[in-house]
Image (cartoon, rainbow, N blue to C red; front, side):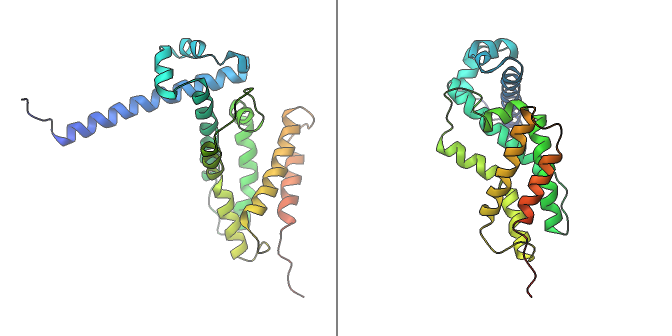
Length: 209
């Protein structure tokens, strides 16, 4: 029997293997997202994605299981990218100021990642329905909004209610304005700014008389 490799070397090998896996997975998702954006959902075949990524179709089946598994991975990746952009918004001592900055960050994420956005919110892939697990994970990716809203309530800025209620109202306002802007019905983000600020103001705590 050979001498077992030192644990340190085993750990380094495992980390390297995982890093290569993650890099390839990210590349495959980027290729699929690019195809969705520039060529539409009909371009999302396993064969074409493999050709564009320079790998075998078997690699895609091994990583994602099926075309549907790839679509779900894209769906979750989109929400994860949104989460990272929202988490990158600098903290503010005033939670209401922090909340007001999350709106522009959300719009920037949507416009910067149109392929992911269309898959997440516009059913860009016909027939694709995310699983309940994926829906739960996707909503959890935006929990930063709930947390900041909860801080606003605790600070007395917003009326005491379920943070999710306010978050869903703000989300609906943002999505409506974004959909119109992406469809070319709005020239810029001014309406988005107005409606998202109005949604927040609707829940402002009124000073007691």
